[in-house]
Length: 131
Length: 141
Image 1: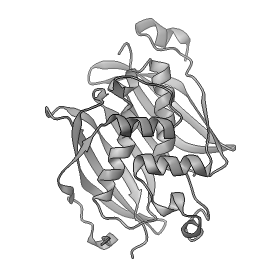
Image 2: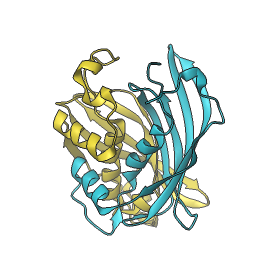
Image 3: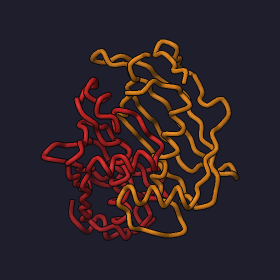
Image 4: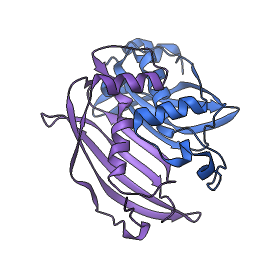
């Protein structure tokens, strides 16, 4: 895989270029619930399934391995339904170096097929070591 | 905060539940598979030796999944529909840790004209504070 270098990341970058589509399948939900020790079952998916679609989203940044998740804000606007497909996209809003660590701050939004917001928030990551 | 603040206007209890989740490398590996996050700092002991922690760490978003479970238990599932979290990870979770998650109500806040409770999140493992931050939950949602 071709990884991006930190100095190639620019405030204003949108990733991915076209919104990422994520299908909320029962298998994805079951795997997530099992891995997190959550015994809840229902027709709604857990909101923090966001942690799965955010990883897919962050993969679209092509950041090198070894990065660290430093901060996270997220707001949920409605329940997530098993069987629906959402689209997610993010934009780099800030870059900074602190204690010699390179940070990237990105805002994201996830929308349902009807265009309604499912979630939005901000991800602050420490960029992995350039390859 | 007194109990009547949260119980008066809505259905939220003044006392938040405590959930406990043991974390071992097998759980980290299962979470990696479930989330598609195979960052080697989580799943590759050799790679992790070269990183800032010297050994694999649990996914921060896995810890947030535990936090959301606690908030959903407290709010009877309402967190999934309209909750909010804002946190900073301040210490890693290692294999062998037992993560304990709870919170305490800090007070009432208004969000988009709606009364909400602000909850200070309390997340620890092995005596270390894992994250700092808060949740917002509408009262009566």
